[in-house]
Length: 272
Length: 298
Image 1: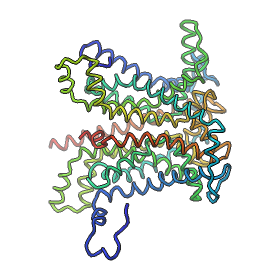
Image 2: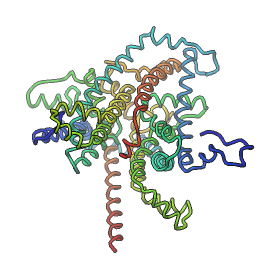
Image 3: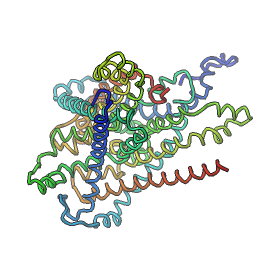
Image 4: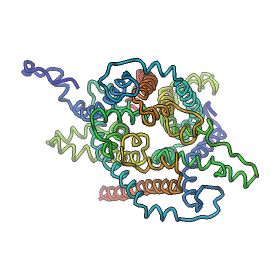
């Protein structure tokens, strides 16, 4: 299978293997969804009695509301700041040719090659030395150390395929720096901006190792899930897990639908 | 970011000044400043704490090497060993699992490759905890696997959870995309014409793989291998959620030194050693790799 597969057999084998591995990736997700509909306090398979009572409990629980609100606030702020920083970061990464760029590229990617738990602890020490009280505000900062490089990477892919002569043409036609940014650069790079923003939001929404050490007394959903998994299991764990999955899926679906509609609108305009 | 030129040089713009005014450095400035404050700063502080006397919380003390000595005397090298062993095992399995898929995505699947990419990337957007918890439900006594086997064949496999293979499974599962995507990029960088040329010259399938494909896709293999290795080396949740207390990995030790033991200098020393180990590997990698070519496919 490793050498060049010329024949049909090897091709089919590779396709089959890919299907198996992709299915493997979804096994635990399915397990969580299944468990969330089980009536029993402790999970057993096959499931004897189905129920949605844990969903009702989650919907009425005040602590769940707090958790979701904290996670949501962190994720929204992370998205906003990351996209702003990463937009310019990606231009420096991929658009402009300047001395020091190679070094800059490596430095930007360095946090990605770093165990997040250790980074979280290092940030905890850093906040304590600076005398900053940890809360969900510091978690925003902590998430960004890891998420900004990822967003830069995602946007850079778009920036690499960007044609700089379009900007130059606009300058030649008398546009100001701000006009070029608003009328040329931003619209062309907007797909990269949108996918960067989605990644930023969802990665922050699901982040655990950085939150663990940087949220102080506040708690995000993944932190709560971890605490309950390690000690004090409750059936709300699979329920909240399934709910976060559903919300992520819903967000992606929504963005995709909007994207399709916008694309169709644009094509219609172009045809006129 | 080098400073501004001195007043006497202001008349004629110097090299530094002109460099500073160009859009590249200007755009890089906010991110660089941010990472300096949020990444470089904390690392310096961890390094500083590792030289402080044990169980102290202030940086204003005489530096000591006591913590480094205690790493050896308190047998912390054991958790280092376990982390290295588990990470190496996971990376080897990942390479074998991912190579055929990456090959398919780069050369065979055509438009379907995008679908595979999306399907592999989607679980990344769900918290690692939830996904690992799903494996707990699968491997648990009377869980999904055990329950199914009991129903169908009457066999029970109850001792799967909280074992070393369960941790390896967790590592392979969580870090699969980090191996797969760089591999895809690496393999798609191999020109078909070279393989055809090798075949025309009489090379066998295995020879083509060993002499052409493997060396030319090496940047991707290296990035994928090292990325997943380093992330696995510093992983915390896998050994805690799937391993129970079977094995203590290094990140586990670091966490408990900071939390339960309230011994910041000890935790810092372990962090510094872990960082030094990973850092060494990353620096070696980055020296030989051209990022523009890999990300931008220029």
